Amino acid sequence: MPDTALTDPSESNPIPQKISLMEALGPLDTGSKRPAYLMLKTAFRQAIRKKLLEPNATLPPERDLAKLLNLSRMTIRRAMEGLVEEGLLLRRRGSGTFVANRAEKNFSKLTSFTEDMISRGRKPKSEWLEKTRSVASTDELLILGLSPGSHVYRLSRLRFADGKVIALEYTIVPANCLPSLEVIEGSLYRALEQVGNRPVRALQRLRAVLFTPEQAEKLRVRTGDAGLMIERRSSSANGRCCEYSKSWYRSDAYDVVAELNDAA
Image 1 (tube, rainbow, N blue to C red):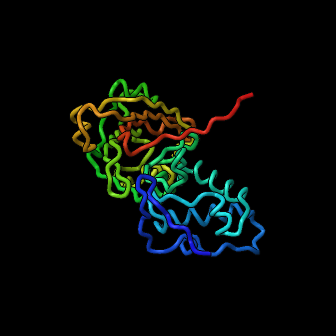
Image 2: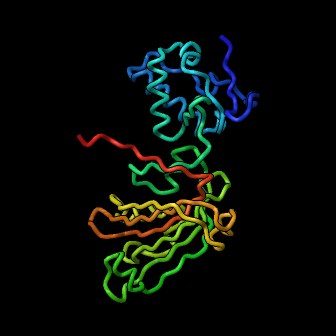
Image 3: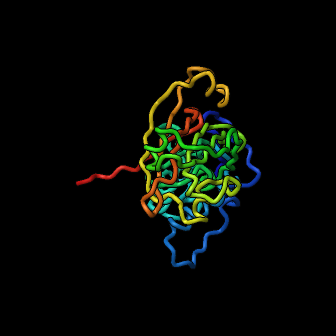
């Protein structure tokens, strides 16, 4: 059976693909004891992360995928729903299911920006604006639960995904949580983890904002454009605060995803 073309949800013409959908997914191990929907999720996840399936490309309908892959529609549906929950696929009524091209943050998981981007097949990058050590202010002492005279590391940077700037981030870390500034290279959480101070819980708050002239210039948007501000206060396994950050995200490039459950 011929492969079904991937199409851009905003255009009627197919997006040119270097390889077919079947080639992108590769053969499924029919002899495996793993459920078929999990194998299909893995195949899609790897194809998306390797950029074998292009961002914004629309997938064939479930019935066509079922015939193409010789799987039941229930198997296809379970795999697709799982990938949507992970933020790798998006569903839009009237347009179908397509490969996500936006950075997304799942509020149910405590992960770093770098981990978020890598898990979605995006290439993260940071541009440092400030990386200094100084005495904590009165407000910072209260926020971090530090004693007077304590030092903190001040970190500010621009965050990129696939070369596109999407966030401006300011972070304060107690100096006693890390041996030096030099250990912070790409991921702050990786540096904290290496010394046993990785955050294990956090209080996070999201607020809609309008960008100031300074923020807009850094984020390459217009002054007054709408954005998202995410404030996070994180603690390590010993219960001490190890991070306080404020991040401003471009609303045209970042989504927030939260999984909700019925408490009853």
